[in-house]
Length: 140
Image (cartoon, rainbow, N blue to C red):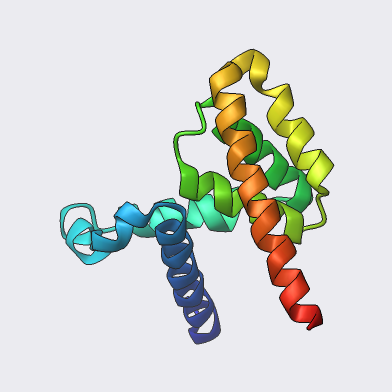
C-alpha cells in the first residue's frame, strides 16, 4: 500500500467510523480497537465494503441511493430515528425534493405498514422543518 493510498484509506476509515456513529448513536461507546483484537481485519473489511465499494459504486447517483435507503428504513418499521433522520437530510442535500422523500415513504406503506409509514412521515416533517429553519437562518 503506497503512503498516499494508506493516508486515503485511513481518512476513509475515520469518515466511515464517524458516519456509523452518526447513524447509530449507540456506537459512541463502540471501540473498534477492541474488535480488531478479536478479528483483526473485520472493521477494515466492513468499512471498505460499506463505504468504499458499496456506497461508491457506479450505477446510482447519491440522491437515488439515499431515497432507497429511506425506503428500506421505512419498510423496516422506521425504528431507527437517527438513521432515518440523517438519510432524509442527506437525500435533500443531494437534490431530492420534499415531495420525492414523502412519496418514497408513502410507497413503503405496502411493505412496512401504515404505522411505519406514519412514523417515517413524522420524522420527515420534522427534518423538513429543521432544514427550513436552517435555510431561513442563512438568509438573515
